Amino acid sequence: MKTPKLNLTRKEFDKVYEPCEDSFLFLDLLEQEIGYLKELDPLKILEVGSGSGIIITFIAQLLGNDRCYFSTDINPFACKATLKTTILNNVNVDIINTKFIDGINQKFDLCLFNPPYVVTTNEEITGDLQRSWAGGIDGRVVIDEFLSRLDDITRVCYLLVINENNPNEIMEIMNSRGWKSEKVIYRAVGWEGQSILKFVKQ
Ligand SMILES: C[S@@+](CC[C@H](N)C(=O)[O-])C[C@H]1O[C@@H](n2cnc3c(N)ncnc32)[C@H](O)[C@@H]1O
Image 1 (cartoon, rainbow, N blue to C red):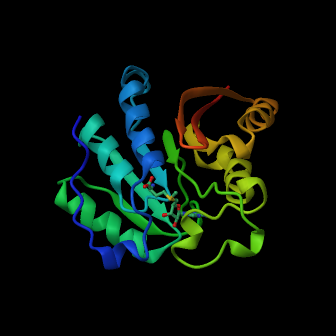
Image 2: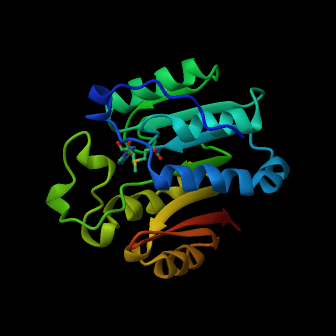
């Protein structure tokens, strides 16, 4: 599958996360999971934290237009960027400027999240661009809040993490909450080890 076309300017990327190795790992993972995804046959697909829109656009192209696609982002500039990318690539996505799924009274068949995972102080989780990567203590502040709400969001989720986030501990916590957890892809990016975890509600 081709990577979606992007037409965002340097000025826009001053406020919106520019697709990086983590974004591309997510695209590779979605291609790898195509058999499972076709079997799952999700009707309502959500990406939390869509940024430039590259991931939600890619999955919409991968699974086709006969499904409902949604994205949320806490950053209004990211929502505008996602809209631009979806229009450029002829896919339909309902784009909502909110934290996680606040104010959305729906549950989704599939959820994707490439979260802010970098280890920082909690005070650094601030500002439009910085919020895209600053993850607080252990890089886990946004991740842990998201996972604590996962039962209300979806039954199947893919979440990107790095080694510093302690993926094994995350999987143990999710297993104890009645989810089946699995590491589905891993890539070493310089000194950083990136994984995508898959959670399926049992
Ligand atoms: C690492 S970037 C990923 C962007 C894009 N999905 C990609 O892979 O290129 C994380 C994104 O999550 C958004 N974000 C951070 N915290 C969020 C929250 N609590 N709810 C919704 N979006 C959030 C950020 O604004 C940013 O766009």
